[in-house]
Length: 557
Image 1 (tube, rainbow, N blue to C red):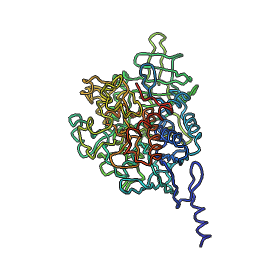
Image 2 (image 1 turned 90 degrees about the vertical axis):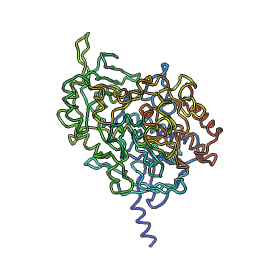
Image 3 (image 1 turned 135 degrees about the vertical axis):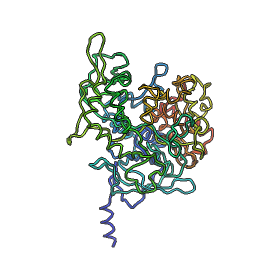
Image 4 (image 1 turned 90 degrees about the horizontal axis):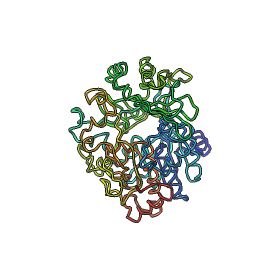
């Protein structure tokens, strides 16, 4: 009998990123991080550095074998930074990676930079391609997560595999893009823009709440750039310090080009649209570019094909919604429509001095061995859920029920005297970008009466009247990492305690890395003091702040 059991256990060994474990045994870790994006990787690094004697497990819950999430496997290689007084304020782990990779980078190269950064710490273990299938929660404390392998099928959907792993942990960190750990462990969540004032929402948005449009990144060749950095009309062509090109532009084409307008009129009601473009070459001297321009509407980031028929699939999805797998498959298929590439080629600009055309006039899709467009392995999700301070998740709570409110983000001060002043004592980093909404429904693209980009101002005229874009970075408080109920959970990912409109600024990857650093250090402190993260004292938070600064984070304006 013992021999039979030994043989079975050997056959059922699942493969991990660093070794093997018998599937029916329990792996015990001190800190368990779910999510392999910038936030999860930053959390792992900072936790490992702050607690070198503790065991850290990083679970990459995407069907990939690399680190970096949307910023690497997802193809989003145009780093969304905004300088404040001539400097990038998002430092710490992101600052180190940015210094090595540049603003526009080869995605595989950045994944390797992050991997090598984490490899310095022998107490970090990485498990690739597993997601939460179930978990055990007792008295609002997560005791165990039960993982199962996942893999993308030839058809495009991500399916469960055969390998399983039970993980017991002391502190858990949710760095997922769908708030999966926070949601499945029973914490209240505000979906999408549920917290907006009711008067700015469509009349049908009552029993459900929409999330920002998603995007599938794709590759092209044939992009034309000027010989040196240039601003031509509304197009900006920039070569970063490491020699890689990035470009942003096309607002006038989006608003006035007859072919682009006709395309969006035709396909917007079908759930797809082309917006003005951000794109970056896949590293120095590469003629391959990753392009961010395809909006995919009505995607529910919480919903996955593999969860259908189970309690994991959300019950309050929007009518006619696409789950993440359906959206990925349909978007890749949509890219093959000949009208798409013809319309993309309209995004070009003529230099009035030389007469030369730059941009996408000669663009061609890059295709794989099966003739399919090369796309991001991960859908670029912009929004999913947000952790409120209480069980209240209704309309009009954006300035009352979140650790980072809409007004704090928009009205942050140049010092500790702005709308975010209350966040200053417990600050764990700075967040900064534009409040950039990429539309919720196709009609948002012409809510101003005609096609106009960006859409933020005409979706929220109150914001525009109050002054529009943030002028200063916002203090990110420690409380933003805490869900409403769980005692041993920290949330630096998409489910952080940030209102939907504030999230429009803080959703970009550098800001998430800042939150990840803080979560990792806070987890280390929690273990050292044998104290729930929810019960931190002023002394505990001061310790976290000092440790973060030792690790290169910027906490002060």
